[in-house]
Length: 173
Image (tube, rainbow, N blue to C red):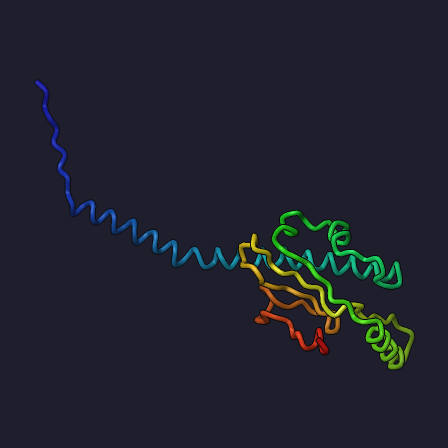
């Protein structure tokens, strides 16, 4: 004789288990997701800042070697700076050069103010900028930039600035 084992199905037990699962998922969503997203944003910000630093160094080296920006190509500089294909796919890079008269004037002003023989550096560019492409998970149009005049990085993940001061970059559009 076979004995049939009856399993008691209980809606109450099922409801409790479902409730525990929902609470566990909510707890993960509330407590684990924000730190994960913040960490991911820090990594993405550091990634593009490293690329900007490498491009800036390449620009400075080119300027010193060639005594100007003649013949400079951003695409070549990005390759020479060894910026990864992933970063190049997610970010577009642009350089806003200073006009020669502004650069020369700034250099002369610094040389006139020099009391001793120090190395004088004036950035040949107003800004080097990275702009997120449509393929970037941070959102298309997000920006990070380096300003040559104040020698600082701004934008995504660094400060609250979303856009540069365009009137400083292009005073006479």
